[in-house]
Length: 494
Ligand code: AMP
Ligand code: ZN
Image (tube, rainbow, N blue to C red; front, side, top):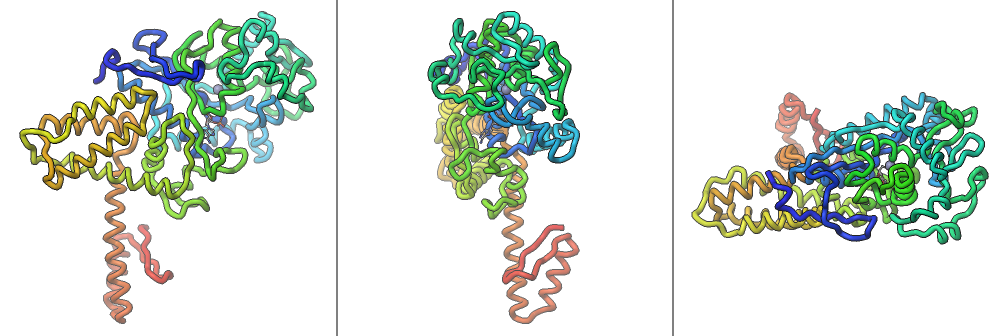
């Protein structure tokens, strides 16, 4: 067990644009809110990268001894098709197109999200609130903002008055924008006539006749704006000022900027002390995205159903690939890069297996295990630097291969430290999966099958059909079918 006091944890805060020492609001308690998925379609690997980044942060803080309350919401209403409060609600639109109840859409994709998170071994949050479950809380906040004179009602909709807010606060503090530039750069779009200024954002939208998801409110039958949801849910479960607010970097503006504005008006705080943003996973150099279809879904990784991938990859290879980049760097996904990560991850798994079984201890150790562990912690304490942690793990793997070949020695005491630390960094902190040791076993089975199949091919070439058929039948009895349609035969495990 680590002690919080022995670590000098630094976190990059988007609010200050600097790495800062992590000082919590309340001693050893941490409140962390992460914007969850909008459940109108399957989560893709880009979404998963962001959730993985925060999973590692959650795991590491817990590992250090913090008591973390991790809140990650489900956005099941209010996220419109674009950021200017325009277009249809994404969930309503999907419900209309698929002829489903909106809650059927929500249920289907929430279920998929949970399945994916479970497969990839991400920990569930402490609380997972839904936006539709907090309509009353959102209405209360909107009333508060109107009472303070920073929001106005027009034709049943309510808008946040960004210009009025900016008289007392700084709109753009998070994304480094200033209102004058925003005014200069934003156009008024059709359908925004109700707003005093195009920069204002919706807190409540009046629903038209056709709109399926709507609730009573003092202003109209309608639905909440996207930004007010997160303010309502984070405040309800974490209070007026909590420690970490996270999400993908694409949420910095306008979503998080608007959350900060709402929170300043309602509670006099920026909501969170540390605003943390995970960078994007790209595909072919462009952001992976649901709406542009430039994405790969987790299932396509397992079944190689994507035109980009000719082979399948395990969850841990994909996660290892993600964690080999720092969470604040852009990362481009390609088959080449996934293959390299798979190879690297298998090397580490092999080293872990060797170390676990190792018994041939020496008096001394030819590797400074304590210094090595310190370096690993320093990497994580430096804004959760998983690529440097992984580089250190590769160093340890190199050493393990040396002791395996009797080119170096390790004492029993150091073996214990190395074995425990490796397990805790790889499985507890990065959340990679041990069962991938089985995948290694699987790849050995593949190798053995390859030998059997090639021997059978040879027998058939030599017209020894009796032996060829015997091998086929024996494998069939074990639930393995041979496919003879290709030039070289292949096999399927039934
Ligand atoms: P959404 O479901 O679109 O609301 O997104 C859920 C989370 O995934 C948010 O934190 C987004 O910032 C994040 N996200 C969306 N696209 C990507 C991407 N290509 N790479 C990394 N994170 C992403
Ligand atoms: Zn949010």
